[in-house]
Image (tube, rainbow, N blue to C red):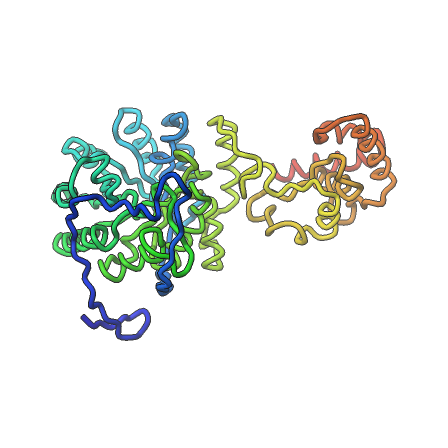
Length: 470
């Protein structure tokens, strides 16, 4: 078949239609996944075309996939975090959907609390087991879309479910039809897609789904789930691990519209963010995430990371309220009791902290030298310096200016006599054997002792600034 691609304004041919293969033995790609060795990265040197959709967005699984790996949230905590998600998403709804369990009364209470907020974004969706009762729950809760697990690798079909590919396909299509009969949008979770037979099962299955979608007029969605984090974003990488190849195959051979295609990544091999970005660039409209990347094993793609990636790719925040990322991180630590690793990008307490004196000197002269972007403006997290044996006078001066926030006219210089005296005292503390950073309280007391008049002046400015901010 030859057709005109309106996006590229060229004629393209579609002459290969992958056929369903009902194999007797599971295809486990043993040359790649030997189990007793690191999974291999293979290449076929076939380059998929970049095909970024007109619209891309973020979806959220914090309250479904995310909380499976930690103490469950309370209904009130979910409602609060959902409100913060909406605030972060902004008026244009960059964070378009959030999915929920419906199993228990507590799950349903959380959904009702979120529904009562009356927020346009993110849209509330669900994730259910494939049975009649769960479909009725979706209808009762007034939810329009639900996720349905349709595992697609032979690891799952043969080893976990004890089915053949044919029986699995029949089971999945029956489930999807039940959703369509009830007017529910099915979001089919292609679990373990990066160990699946793409041409022998995944694309033929996707073709069947698209036929049902056209017949019913309901946009069946496909979530490509990199369940074990095996996805590879290298150009020319081969199946089953190639992110570009998977997205291209679903778009080109199964004719899945970009807006019905979503990527769900895990971080087992440190690739969650880059694989999600690659999925966007090569034709997938949605990437699925969790706040702070929470989730089983190494976690999911962090939502806040993809918010930053979105801004980088699009050149705009598109209405997102990025400082809310800091509010969310603070809520997790203060109210949920979740300890964020200190060096976690964008949300860890030390992500923009420096201890090195030479870096502090650069920050003192111009923070742009050693800060990744204006974290004070964009995340409400100005760069900070920890004072220890290596901070030097530049670090101490930066700490004073950052802590008390004087205007440019009153900022203290690293050559100031007060800074020099504080440096002597800091050196003496570490010469005596200390090996931890100085606290703000200790440094405040030291500042007062070394320059009482300047300390009083800066304290007054700090208090006045807090009044204005309130």
